[in-house]
Image 1 (cartoon, rainbow, N blue to C red):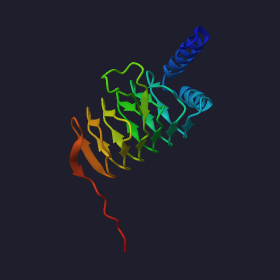
Image 2 (image 1 turned 30 degrees about the horizontal axis):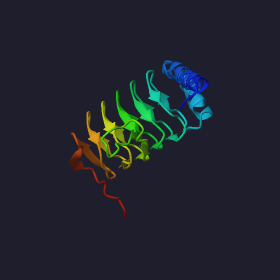
Image 3 (image 1 turned 135 degrees about the vertical axis):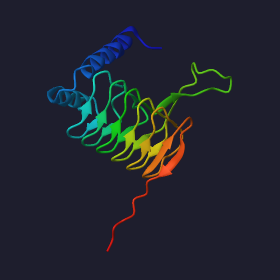
Length: 179
């Protein structure tokens, strides 16, 4: 059972994090937000853009590459680990979930615990607005996730997926120009 002091500390941590993440996306504010996330155990690359209204909890286990752009309303649960590759865009209102409640055999979630599984998003990917990416999913480099998609399975490099659940729309395999 959580004590009163534990509860107070958790709520204070959440409140301070919310205040910092509500700062505007001026370069100086983005540097401050990135430094704050690093102080809490995240790995944050250079020139990351963090729109106001972003929510990340817990922060430890988060890895953001260089030039990542997380739009307004993005929610990330980091307990299972979340990695976002460089130059990736994550659209408005997207949810990246790396932790979820277990459901016991009795059909209840209370007291059943949690399941954690990492989410990995490659470099140069584009996650459209309002997507949901579930625990354990890996999204390859240059993949595109159409707006509103619910990603329940891995997405290969260069693929375009959409729908609920997300299905392959087309493959953008880029042929090498050897010679």
